[in-house]
Image 1 (cartoon, helix red, strand yellow):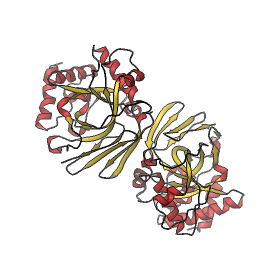
Image 2 (tube, rainbow over the protein chains, first blue to last red):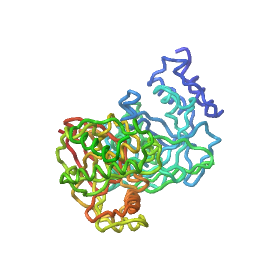
Image 3 (spheres, rainbow over the protein chains, first blue to last red):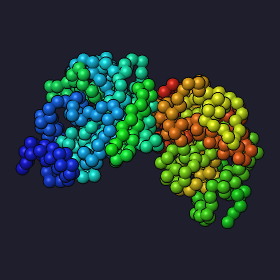
Length: 254
Length: 258
């Protein structure tokens, strides 16, 4: 490739810093594939001071089929991306923010290994919570290929996590999910929307990280995959994610 | 132009022969909701005269995307006929239908008579015997589902058949908005949803139906089944398919397609 991985990472970082989207990288560099995309993402991670955890993307089977892949993708969560409960999202600090509801796992202990299953994930989690992820693609109008979006850290930007509760006795597959914007229901789902079971999605992540010699650390959070389509937000909007048994989380935008 | 009775007879024949007809709105683009219900009433009378009976009602177009697609801001309804009700696990023969699709729905069983106007969500909740997991098979006697509002309303709101679980769960403290649902076909996840997809709350669907029927002096009767609308996009079915809708707190309902 005529351009270095670090150069591509720098372009993405600059787009975020300038709040100016760029055209997708694969237009200029058609040789950029998904493994190279992950190398760009790792270069971005190396420049990030602290990591709060991880996130999954493309966990809906229907969406995977649409783009012709059969596995999810993952990205990292910069600690600086965390919004506190009640803290508004400053939309002017972003390019084109979109929100989606998530089930969030909070790790109670380290978890790694190539054979980790959903059961291990549940056992290692100190709690689960309702979350809202704010996506903000660095590409014009979210126009990207898989390799592009992997390089762009799966559009990760901000996130907010509600109060975690123990997962014991909750069938996360069946919990109802209601996503509202300005008081209107925009989408519903159940937990199964993420890879059939959100804990299975996290287990996939752990196995994937194991292949790179990594894992999850105690205290990290994992956003287990958007449960509905992402909703664009602007100043004055309020989005509300309600997940049965986990509670409600609201994010106001200014 | 044909009369509502003639249109009802055309639909009646289409049902009997499984041969779809062109949309009424092709020849009469001005047909509206009221025309649709006039035809529906005539068609229902024809079917009841054959020995069928009304055991409940379905409410359709309860999801915002469906309403937008048809350019309306209200649901529609139609009767549920005894001959179309299946039990959990039953085999449903495909040859009954023309272009069937399946939808997972929350279904209420009325415990008390409920007559509008003035029925609130609270009153509707109190009138329920309980709630069950449901699946509706929708079908269109109008060719290729090329329906406008009057067409689908006339065609019994595109109802084809239904199945419910047999365990009636008391509504009690259930938050029906938050009941999660997964739909699988042959064990593979097809879609998910939650109760709020139906008009924000499935109980609100029942209140809307009671108030709308109340304007015509019709009441919801004890034992009636009320289908409250799809929680996801409808899925076409093929012979050999096994569809399973599982609802949080309500359990599963299964339909096998032959």
